[in-house]
Image (cartoon, rainbow, N blue to C red):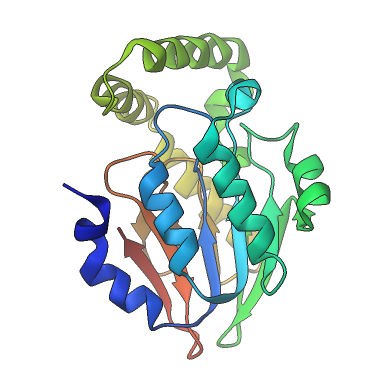
Length: 236
């Protein structure tokens, strides 16, 4: 189905709404699993005071092979930064390039960001710091990442196999549960009321833990905060 037709109802809401914040993560531009058409549509139609890029915007293993749509996305972000504050939080897949890109494109770069929403302290972090598996078993993670990218190269256009293996592997190592537990514990220690993460690629919307999801699955998602301080998980 044509992306324009698929998003027409949702797009009308996007066009008519101005947000205080939009928080999005895990685009993985440069990789074959990036949902380019939805991402480009998203960037062309959102209106927000602050855009927070919550990590893994670029896939570091593919930065030497940026294509036309990759550059279009970076160009849209650069254009957007003239009137919108853009904050780039480093992720685990873009940790070596996020600072350089931020400097080049005029973004604010940081490890985490704090918001005050309806008198609540809200932390925004990528979430890999709560992923004990990639931190403890870094060599296995590196090998698995290489295999995952190899599968992308030879998978079908829709990347069904690559996406399925990604979901199953994260469920197998209980990635989502571990990130959630670690994030909530971090909230308690640091006295935050809410924490917003990415990293897992699984969207989630609980009272004190929220996850942006990603732009690498057929169903993409992001978090918005409107002028009334309502935090909402949006699905495209």
